[in-house]
Image 1 (tube, rainbow, N blue to C red):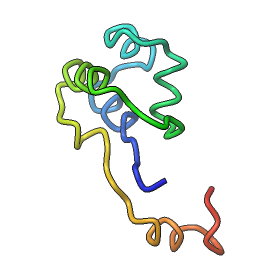
Image 2 (tube, rainbow, N blue to C red; image 1 turned 90 degrees about the vertical axis):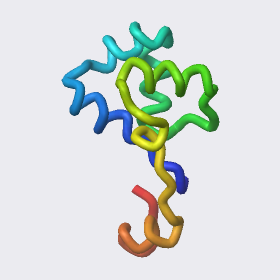
Image 3 (cartoon, rainbow, N blue to C red; image 1 turned 90 degrees about the horizontal axis):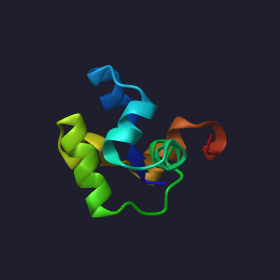
Image 4 (cartoon, rainbow, N blue to C red; image 1 turned 180 degrees about the vertical axis):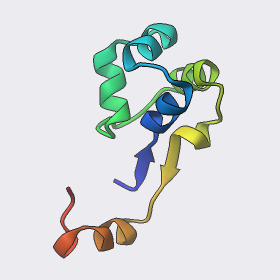
Length: 81
């Protein structure tokens, strides 16, 4: 998937746990895990706004686009890990 989620980076910078972030944002830890592990198909703007508010960051600090060709070059034989 060309959209990469960098919630882990912001959690580390803020020295915050996944459980604390989930509680402060108002979502379940399981749903936050789906989002942070890049398995989510969509994210509500209200959730994104709450994440940004709690983490004191911009949406671009949490989400970035990565070219499919770059991702394929980074893995052996073009396989996704």
